[in-house]
Image 1 (cartoon, rainbow, N blue to C red):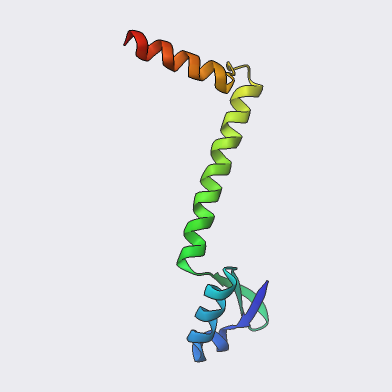
Image 2: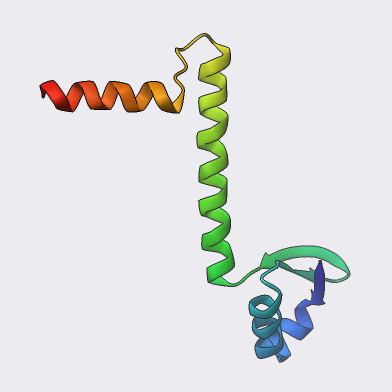
Length: 88
């Protein structure tokens, strides 16, 4: 975890930007000694958003499975697709 003061952000934006890009981690900015904001590179943010969407999809699938929705193996899905497109 990287922590920098708001003064550093104000006076040396390039340092914060370089740090965020090099570490690909959030940089916590403090104001008056207290946590205030978090900044991160756009690439790291976009990667994080994709990861969170994937996790949400996996969690949704797991909830469906636990609630009794049908579950199919890879082999069953392949067989269903072959059947569908053979007669499609």
